[in-house]
Image (cartoon, rainbow, N blue to C red; front, side, top):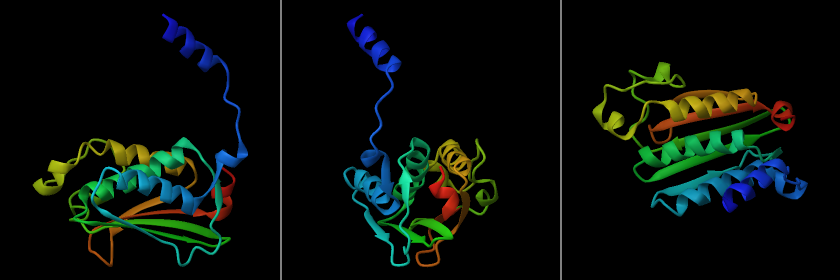
Length: 174
């Protein structure tokens, strides 16, 4: 009963927002997310940002964090040992590529990624994957934040690659 009262009071009083905690550099957000996976995984996570000329400060929104976590988490699950995140930004375009050294996206599903309830004919991939709902939700959330999400093959490792791209002005306005 007491817990119910506390939860009710918390839900009725909006949290005070603090710009210091609400705003975050995109590279720092990516570091926070990958650090959370390093605690539970023995995979090697690498963030490269050589072409991160603008390094935008973004609002710390659940949609952005969840979408990025989803794709980084999937890369961790399917990778053999390496997850590489590449951040590039300019005043025009901001792009994040999440690459892994796993089996990559199966040819039978790559054109359907982002739709719910899909299965691969490849048993190795299908045994580690669900119904595609995480990708569907992550993609949908990021697209609602004006991102373009594409799926492909990582040229360096031949694993999976997810490319998330915004016009920088759109990313800053959300």
